[in-house]
Length: 404
Image 1 (cartoon, rainbow, N blue to C red):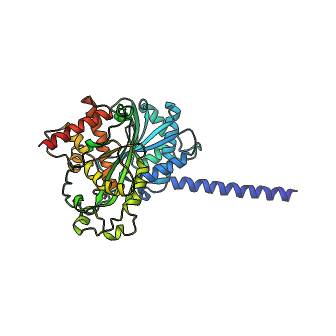
Image 2 (image 1 turned 135 degrees about the vertical axis):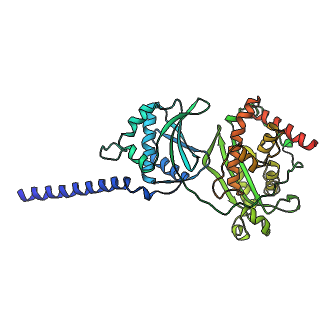
Image 3 (image 1 turned 120 degrees about the vertical axis):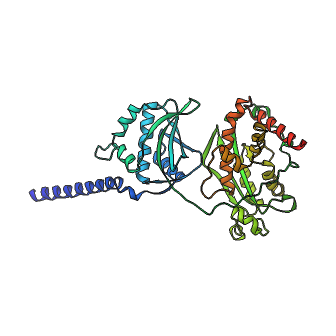
């Protein structure tokens, strides 16, 4: 009996020892050298965090343009999960947004909710909390220090939303300098003013409440009238005034003709890149499904529409939904300004392209989406608050251009 008791105690002791070792290993993993910070793609972080939240009462939507950052992924994941739980308990909110924004050599991670900012005194209390319910685990402050980071809360300019902000190290991913891009020709023969007007209900819907699909194309060249055609199609989605970071369409297209070397210098795509891609007649039905009931948006939209329209017709498709053109909207807002190309407007509004994505269809679509979100407050200030208002406003700019 005594022997069996000693054996049982010994086995329990060993099992306890293994549990302590495992716990120590986990803690050590969370306290490892900051030099182990690794390049992390923000959308991967949001995907992991969404899985971590599971099917509970917390909902997270990633918005904005994705970015690279340097982080201890597992530790940062646990930190953000804990902060979301604390924010839920404090604010009573269950729906949050997550966004990364580029700063001066830093990337800001923002957790956003409808309501007021968190008091700094409350944040100081949170810093001293353990990362999990286990008191032996590192404190939130330990994870912040490992990332040479901090956290503070601020209100959005509209006063309706607040955010909790964490600065992290940015990742410098420098590719070859972009080649100068010739401006796209403006296609007035395929006038977006000739497209069917939206129905009364959609037309009266505020711009901030629309579902919009922002798209861009890359082509074999700039002369679509003489046979240049689609080689890449990228798009992203704006919903209720927010660019969804993880919702995108990105597809190469086989043009079934050679890509001129001078065009490859601009967008970087060669014949080998598109050799195994499907033709436009296969890609465009998928894109039409992606658009759904959304309003189309593009920069110099007539060019992009001219690129997709011929193969769409061959595939029996209609892209006859309302279209907004950020080039025409910008020209209507600032008629005395000279530059309304995407590069000029990105510089004017301090919009940042993802590294290596300039002159890619998806990269340009995302910047066009951010541009539109910067234009909407200016449109509203001019009394242009609905879709039908915006269409009439851009049509006026188009008519003035044709009259010159």
